[in-house]
Length: 153
Image 1: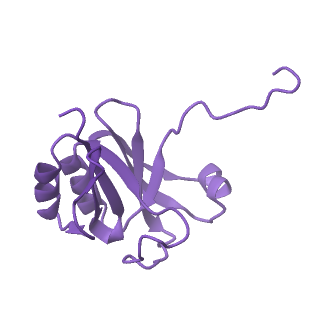
Image 2 (image 1 turned 180 degrees about the horizontal axis):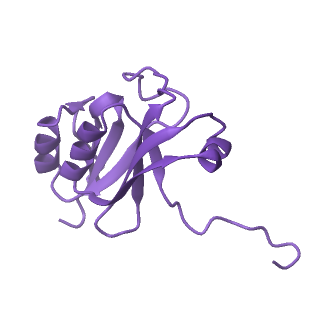
């Protein structure tokens, strides 16, 4: 690297989400339209050293969007057991809040996700005739937002 240039991320590789019910979380994101890229179990000294926990054993499922540019890594810790935060924290809670997905038919997506236990947080809104937006809470309190571009039906 030449002097004066700062290294920068090339891309956002994935977002990690820890869950207890891995099957329900996978079903939710598959219904949203993500595809399972792979699944495995991770454990051992390198995993322990990486995340600063001891005796880790975790089930991992990697999902990707259909365009292949975005991934979500769902983890279920067999050991040590995951700690619980407030699964119904409001949208303005500090820390990672939500993931937003672009969709082409919000009504269809919301109806399908409700069959997997998703709840609409507020209302579906039209933002300046540019986007139709909504927030949903999925399994284990996972917060997502949907955006439908009204300029390009």
